[in-house]
Amino acid sequence: MATTISGELSGTSNTTTTTMVLQAAGQSVSGTTLTDSDTFSLTLSASSTYEFAFMLQTTVSSGGMKIALDGTVGVTEVDYIISYFPTDSFGTIGYAQRTALGDAQAVSTSTDSASMTWVFGTIVTSTSGTFKLRFAEKSAVSSVTVLKGSFLRLVKSA
Image (tube, rainbow, N blue to C red; front, side, top):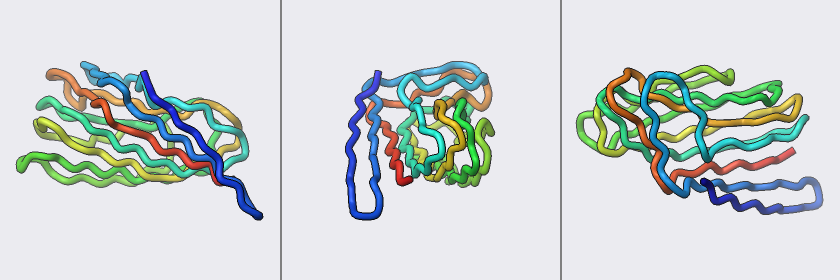
């Protein structure tokens, strides 16, 4: 379940469309197989440029968490950074850069009662299709939950 808000800003030289998607209820997964987010899956247009930012509030078991951006959208170029910030004093701050869809990245290796993961990037599309977040446990121990209040901000700039 998601709450989606879209709006358009037009100027003399370009038009941008901003879409905000808000996680309305938590989603938990168990196991190491990447699972599609119930909330963060959007259809992107062909021959377009998008900027995106995910903010994921999560709870993570001792098995850790991994995420991937994926979809059926045709990609000319994609670049994004994943940053992980635990809210307890035992976790580590992580950072990774990716240049392809479907590439899973571990973002947590410790038990965190709550943590925050940011994913910032750009994608240039060649064909239209879905663009989605996938997530799972890094090691199968208990579960991973993306909490209510997490969001995606997507800006179509060309």
